[in-house]
Length: 86
Image 1 (spheres, helix red, strand yellow):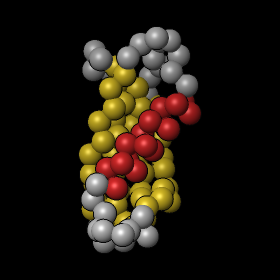
Image 2 (spheres, helix red, strand yellow; image 1 turned 45 degrees about the horizontal axis):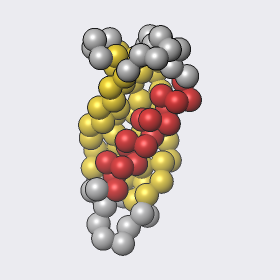
Image 3 (cartoon, one colour; image 1 turned 90 degrees about the vertical axis):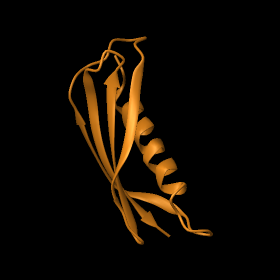
Image 4 (tube, one colour; image 1 turned 60 degrees about the vertical axis):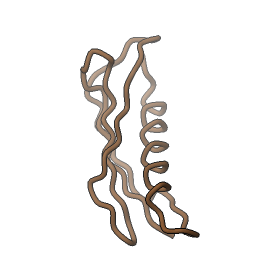
C-alpha cells in the first residue's frame, strides 16, 4: 500500500514548489500547516497522480490543495497546506 507519509511528502513537495514559483524575488517559504484526509488505499506498485491547485495566493501566505488519485481516478488522499512567505 502507498504509505501515508509518502503521500504527505508528495503533497508537501508539490505545495512548496507551487509556492516557490509564485514568490516575489528574494522571498522564501516553509509549510506552517498541513492537513491530510486519507480516503482509500492504493495497492503496492500502483501509480498515483497528484494535482496541486491554489486555494489562496496572498502576500503573506499561500494555501494549496493537492488531490492524490489512482490512474483510474479513485481519490486516495486530499491534502490542504498553508505556506508562509518569508
